[in-house]
Length: 446
Image (cartoon, helix red, strand yellow):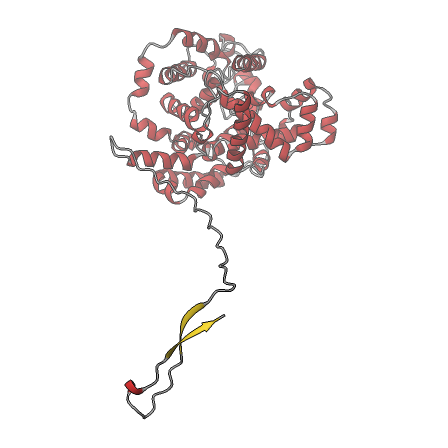
């Protein structure tokens, strides 16, 4: 299964990159119009993937958002402890481009990991890597955004930085090694920040946001494919029925979306907005984006009638009109999809139980996946407060036991004796207290 997913992903990447070269001198020394880069650094043919759509915020509003992010990141622990909801709202509006290099490592916890391991990245880069992984990584370097100005030349700082980041990860997690889908993820990170910060962000994504996605068996992506199909059947039953009738399972299109975090299939401006929300709210953002794309591709009866077979349906999922994928209207639809973290957790446990019936060897722990920046921040704060050599005691709260039903006493035919007291009369003049009549008597009732 993992090999099949890897081959499909490789074919998809090859198909997308065949129109470009390996970053040759003709690209570097081409004519002026071809070398013109857009605001994200894409040159020539891929520029349309990153052009900004209509409805961009005015410059004054961008400056206000930048000031808010500067204030929040200057007191990050205080902000995350007291106002995590404000961080989520600002991430949904979009992090300013000038501050993503500062905000993404804080959101995902990479800044804290880097501070705790100050020399780890340099040691991993200088260490000799596994020749097998180095050869595989070297073959994939030119495929990662070949028309971006950072990755044009094999000797450029972009490809060299990408090689160092991916090599360092194979040494950091030798049991996982290298997955081809990590290339686009690391490349997008390198477009925003230096290699060391990009490395620790990649570590956080693989360990806390998407654990099990990039391992040798890709077990987590199999589970999430079933979860996605179950959510689709509840939210879009007609689309789910059409996909089933055409034999289009989620593993035919979902791995390319989720493994690469939509970096290969959406306009780059929209990709950055998705990543802003993903670092804040976790993997549920990926499910919301995927459901939105399926709805845009097959939401109407006319669209479904135009896809009578498997190939036509897959082509519809891969060729959504760019006008519908512009960042502002697209993200507005994404945030309205009714998928909560609780829904995701419940569905993950249900689908995991079903998978384990047919594959008992499947070992997955959905609870290891942390739901976004607040959970990662709390986990890091708890780890920092842990005394060295001692485990933090866990507080286990057991649910209250159900009260036992009380039996009605059998009183028929029984005699009860009780002492009844008469109400005291107001004090009057008369004989002394010792001569008064007793105030109690024995009463027998039947």
